[in-house]
Image (cartoon, rainbow, N blue to C red; front, side):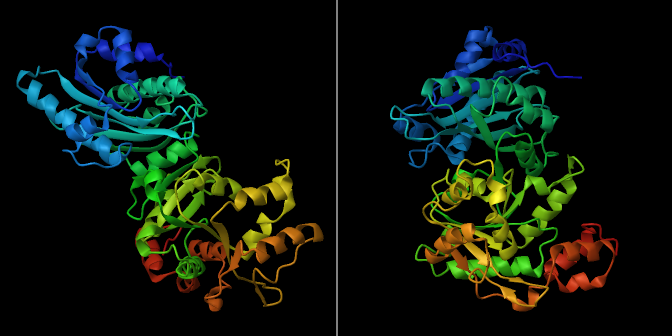
Length: 468
């Protein structure tokens, strides 16, 4: 049965007429669009205790960070707003609480398009709300990217999104899939992307935020989602801000000694870069959603197993919907990072240089190369074993058709593609497909092809078809 999508006004009115919910709306930067939606719907006196717009930075610091300055459009400021407003709500109204009342606070801190239109609209929205346990609130936070080329339109979008979020917290909290889908009611991704979502609290402890992130990508609500090395969903702006990124794409089912060596050798090579420091350099394992789909549906348990293994090895994980590498590079171009290094093996690089993959681009391979190598971007190429001849294939001894060879030589001569040299050649004969087949057919030789931590985890959890 298809779900009826209510208009923004009907959602706001439904909340206003529900006697259970009462709370505060606090907004920074994008006007008071969410509060306006509730007031215009009618009946807001039964829902809204207070609205506030701490637009001036001095007032924002005074109210929410005890005078300490910091970034204003960030998760920390949003959480400060939620905590301060909820505490005040309880202090002022707690003694007069009616038995059926459930207090809530909605907050957002948003940067909309400026007059010169030389910034990117984005922001944080969150709700701290009670459901079954008065005084023990749940919390949902999301990060959004505003895509419209007009500040006023972005404000309207923000109003719709805020109402959708509050409505979902009250009526869809027990169905995470429906919760996420409803956030885009009366919206589309041309207007806004939801790049991160996190749910927690006594009524939401059943939610796995990692799967929530994957659903954002699967539903087309964002092109990619980040998990830090501890498995927490993170916003890419915060993760990549003034950081170097070393990105390895793979299936990691499971990660083998070859994958481990690629990570090690690429990191070792980047240490020679003058911008390198351990604190500002991230290694990221990227898995495209195409590799997570089997037989038309998402193998969620299999996905979590891969993330757990990579996190256990100290790796950050990116789940994306990108098939082509130039789209992956363009995605990183959204953020204020330092250097970008895309890591791949020789066989993958040969495919990257195949003209047939770029028939959708007017400029073909040349256009793709232009997109793949913006400023401060290089490809690190890991060698491969030619199983027919037994020779090592490196980035500097490859053969391409004449019309492609000129492009290849240009990349080589300008050091845009870089050979990784400090590698374990004895591991080059390991095939990830072969390792998976050995695991599933109980041939113990796979145990010598993957790191010991991975062996132990696969055996203890019986991953990837291992039956032992």
